[in-house]
Structures are given as structure tokens and as C-alpha cells.
Image (cartoon, rainbow, N blue to C red; front, top):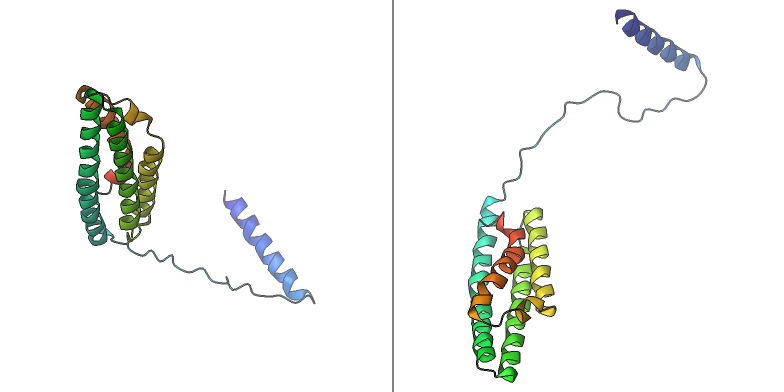
Length: 166
């Protein structure tokens, strides 16, 4: 091991000596001396995250309450065989999801934490996609269907931001 270190040092001295004797210009790339690695403390996003999550909570209780009311009307109309009114209530529920997605995007765009901002975008896209493709709503015909269908859907919609706003 000692011989290997000496060989590397000797080789370095020989190369340095050869470079000095050469007529070729030598340029310094600016990395002549190693510098100590400076680590900055991690950024504290907690105050901003709490603010954003507070706004998201209002979105979830407001927009999703309106969504729940529209779903409730839709179920009542389906059970009463009033298909036109059920279709209108379904469209209203989808509009509430679209609105929730837009509100989530708006509120999380102000997040300082880039991961929360990305999670908000992911959640917003999930809401908006569900507003356009309403397969899960079509499965809801009775209140018994509601819990089976909506609970996993809510988890999917909210899971991206849940880790930040728990």
C-alpha cells in the first residue's frame, strides 16, 4: 500500500515537472485549492405549509360539501326514477369537482415547498380528470353504493397533499 502511494506521488511530481519544462501555456481552471463544503440548513417551509393547508382545508370542506350535496341529490333522483334531474345533479357534482381541482391548484401554487406545490398539481389533475370521466359517479345508484365508491375515490384525490396537510 505504501509503495502504491509513493508511486502515485512520484508520478504526480514527474507530471508537474514535465508541465513546467514544456513551452505549452498552462491555464488555471480555477479549482487550484480545495474548499470546504458549506452546507446550508434545510429551508423551513412549515409556516407557509400551514397557511396553504389551512386554505386547502377550506377548499375540501367547501367544494367537497357542495359535491356531496350534488351527489345526494343525484341519488335521490335516481331512486325516484327522475333521470333528467339525476343527470343534472351528476353534472353539478362534476362541476364541483372541476372547481375543487382549480382551487387546489390555485392554493398550492402559493406553496414555497416545491414538493407540496407538485402534490397540489397532482391532486388537482386527479379531481379534474374525475370531473371529466365520471365512471365512479355512474356506479352510485343508492346510498349503499356511495360509501363503497366514493371513499376510495376521495383517498385517491386527496392522497397527494395528505402527506403535507395531515
